[in-house]
Length: 266
Image (cartoon, rainbow, N blue to C red; front, side, top):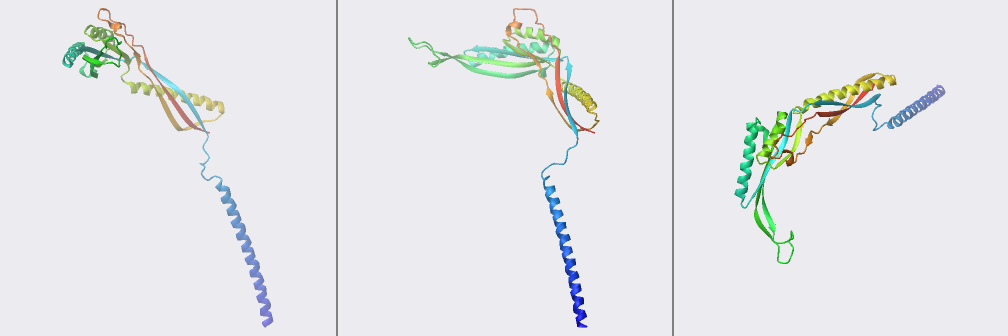
C-alpha cells in the first residue's frame, strides 16, 4: 500500500512540474510579446498622429473705391522780439484761417490742432577778427511761435479752393494732402471676400487636376491693407498771388487682401 502511494505521488509530482514549466514558458512568452509591443510603440512617443490629407492654397483679392474725404495740414509761423508778440501774430493768423474754413462748411470736429510750438531764436555773435561760428557767443534775438492744424474735408471737390483760401490768409505751411475712403473696414471686407473666392476657385482647379475632392476647411489666414495716397504740397502750389485754385484729382483708392486656406481632401 505504501509502495503504491509513493509511486502515485511521484506521478503527480511529475505532472505538477510539467504544468509549472508550461506555465512558466507561456508567461515568459507573454511578457516577451508585451515588451516587444511596448518597444515598437515607443518609436511614436512625442509624435502627433498621422495628419489628414490636405492642400494649402493662397490667393489675393482687391477692392477699389473713390475717396470720399480729403485731409491736409495747414500751419503758420511768426517771429517777434517777445513771446507774447509771436503768439499774438500766429494766433490771429490761425484763427482767421479756421474761421474761413468753418465759413466754407468745414465742421468743428474736422479741424484738429496737431502741433503748437514756441522756440527762442538766437544769433551767434562775431568776435573781432574771428569769423562767426555756431560755437561762439550767442544772443537771444526773439521768439518763434508756430501752430499747425489738420483739416478733413468731406466734400473733396472743395480741396483746391480751400488750399487757395488758407494760402491767401497767411498760411505758410501746407502739406500732407491725402484722399481717403472713410469706411475703410467695408473696403477691406470686400477685398477679403474677393480673395476667398479666388482662393476657393484656385483650390478647386488644383483638386480637379489631382483627382481629389475638397472637404472641410482646416485652417485660414489673411493679411493685407493699403496706404492712403498722399500728395505733398509746396507753398508755391497755392501761393496767395495766384488766384487760380490747383486741380486736385482724387484718383482711386485700392486695397488688397491676401488669404491662405488649407482644405482637407479625399
